[in-house]
Length: 333
Figure 1 (cartoon, helix red, strand yellow):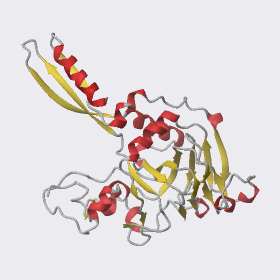
Figure 2 (cartoon, rainbow, N blue to C red):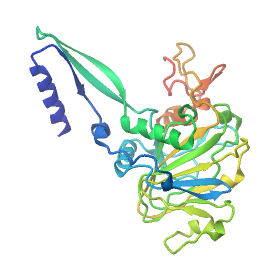
Figure 3 (cartoon, helix red, strand yellow):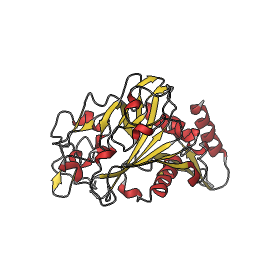
Figure 4 (tube, rainbow, N blue to C red):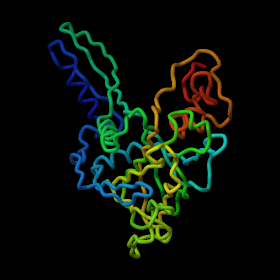
């Protein structure tokens, strides 16, 4: 159906008699529907509630529309791979039994390829390609910045995660323990975790160190894992904002959190990590010399989105070349 639609657009463009520039959008399956994705309602403070002050945790009900959630899931479905974690000492991305989900990173301001057919009155045709932003991703990025009052340039790319039956992420901190990751943008200051699906059972985000978690009322719909801390159920469209650092920049150990195992259903979520400084300051200018990978695993890490997640290790910065520059395509081989 989509191929037929593209063909019809091309035929219509060729039939135009007058000189014109006719945009013909060649989109992926997800991008075909981007323009029709309904946004969430305007910001409404009544939808935000504080669920903890130690650590600071807030829940925004209906942060994303159902259509926006579905759009993100479609973008992630084709590219999700086994999730990794950052090694506490080296900063390298490694597989670990503590995190068994699969995931991928979107490009910042997800881009769409557009073909423009240029026609003249002499029936001479030419074409040009332009890159435009995915409007859905752009407005979600802007909405996150508006809610958190933190600049977009301080944030990592949105990650799409899928948790299937039994998959989990053991309690951990989002701030870093290694110096490598701290060198780029500093610690992760805040996390916005968006739920893209409602899980029938399990999959809660749990904060085992939150002060006063024992007073949270829970019924038998909460999983056993969720009984061990302050728990937030994954509801499609909702988002959790929590801070990994105190206002003075000191790491907050109470921000320890995890994803409970999925018992029934499937969990899709989209975390957005925001640093204390700009995360975009490192140079990605291509170089013509010294283009190589220093690990046989670079291609696998790059395919899993680690160039965006751990750029200081993978890509490097000024005076400190990364270990996987070739696989991250920041130099010419």
